[in-house]
Image (cartoon, rainbow, N blue to C red; front, top):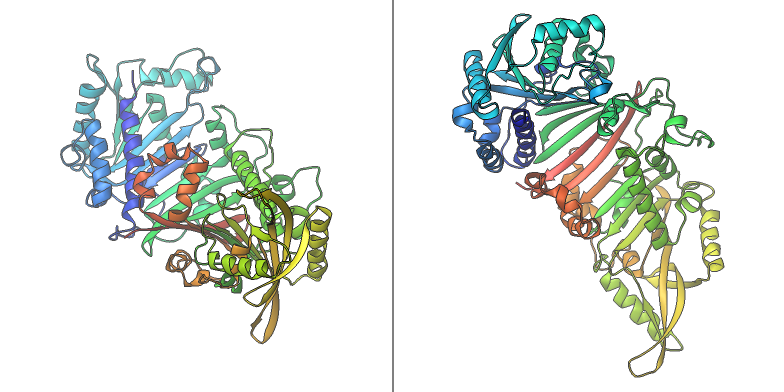
Length: 613
């Protein structure tokens, strides 16, 4: 039988979450208490994923964008919110994957259990709704069965007797060849407080057992309690992920992954400063060191990488003086302290032989860094990481802008006029945009390392060309290219491959040196303030970082309105992902992320989505 009811309610939760996200840019949805969701007591400790919506659909229904999205979806399900749901639906909805394989029967394949728990304002009305909707919409021509189980009444199509089936399973320890019929929908109302809907009666039985024998419930799991203990703010929604189990579920495996680097992740959603804040708590798996989880087992651990149980104290402050060298047109900014440590933590998963979401993300990051190496003509791993132990900032500038078009015109005119032959500067970043990298030269190796970069450029066939931009001496890495003009004359272009310079700032009576690397003259001009304003003057940037506490471990800033067209052009599949997320993405202005270090093996971070009002 088709699982239309479960699918419908799962989709309702998804649409409600999208509506919640979109609604956060407008009027307040109201803060909720910070207690754990009530419905989690029905979920087992083995659950791969639990998502709870803690603000009622009624609040979302009254939001224009969210209400329209929910109404449109319910119409397709022949449901009327005011008539069918509002009379009984409470303030909380929890959706969970309860088990990787609820019947543990290898003969019928992997059959995950799915459970939806909603609080109810009226037990009698909710029972009436379930009976009516199940009989009329899901199982036309089939009678319903009402089977008592531990003080509740499980409503489901007439299949095997639930009690006898359950007793058989429990006595044998495993279902020996009995097909539980994963398409069966079952529901019950518990204590006139909760409505439970599952994809099989056995899943409901397990849920009721969890609530009555609380030691079986997720609420008693050590990871659940530890990660939620780090999320103490009022929230609109809450998620808990058992990372090894979720990886197995995504891979359609009935068994857990071996030696996971992280054991669990909790995410709390709250409304803040005209947007949505996602606060996360990521717990490292027991008996797992960062040396084995973040780098190859055969490689030498890097100095300065802390163990997962060691407290990592945030040391980065913003606004950072480096931000003054980034133009306000920056589409992407990554800023922090100790670049080598940052990259080592995010780049290498424990096992690249398995195609997981983690390895796919790492692959994309490696491709990005490879393109960055190519544009800046640097090798981040060997040329930059050893000496970038202080603050750093990396910025991507959109194509056709760079914030330094005026600088490019001025510098080209001045340089070309001084050339003895017909020489012109040319840059090839029209389609890919430009990059800026700024690093504090606090390491004693910095001066020698930068001189080594110039030597590498010479060995690679580049010329070292001194120049001035806004009276600032800079060094260009260039190549000469000859070509014929339309008139058949020979001309020579000087192709700019990279630019770098040293600048100074005096902070608290102390002079600090910074090295700026740019992929073009235009980008360097923007960094030096020619034809552009610094990033801290951009209102979008200020709003994106304002919600974060200080100090932290750095930030990632994304101007969605600038970057979106380029991402869509480069990744066509992104448009398919955008369709279900459209209520959020159409209102999204910027994204920003920061981390606050770790304590007792748990790393806390924040992701802020700034939405249009």
